[in-house]
Length: 167
Image (cartoon, rainbow, N blue to C red; front, top):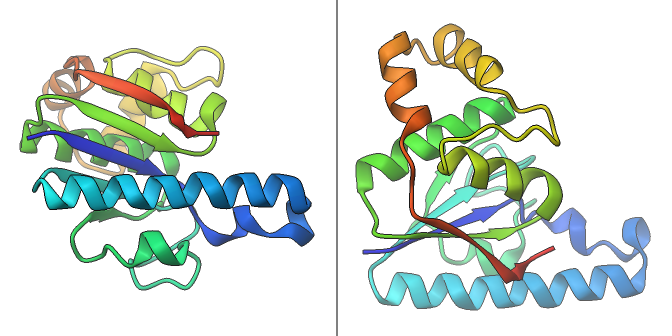
C-alpha cells in the first residue's frame, strides 16, 4: 500500500479575481491533475490523506469540487492549527504503514515542504517549524508524552514531493 498526501487544495486558489486569470488557470489544471491522481490511488486501494486549509469538514464548499468528489474515500484532516494538523497526519500515516507517501498540493515552499520535512523526521528551518514548536503542540494540544512525541517526530517516512503535482 502507498499513500498520497494532498495539501490545501481549496477552491480559493482557482479564483481569477484573487490570483488573476493565468495563475488561477494554472492552479485549476494542477488541481485537476491531483484529482486524477487521487482517483488512481483510490482505485488501487491505496491511502489518500487530505489536509484542509480552511475547510472544517469534508463536505465544505471550499474544497475544489473534483477533489471533493472522492470523499469519503480519503482521510480528512482538518486544520485546527497547522502544526497540530501536520503531527496528526504523520501519526495517521505511521499507523497505516504505507510503503511510500507522495505529497501534492500548495504551497511548495511552505505547507508542502513543512509536511515533507516532518515526514523525514526533521525541522524546516526555512519556515521556523522547529522540533521544539512541534513538541509544545504535541504536549499541550494532543496530550502526547515526550516519548510518544519523540517516537512520532523522529520516525522517517519514505516520502517524496510530486513535483508535477505541487505549486
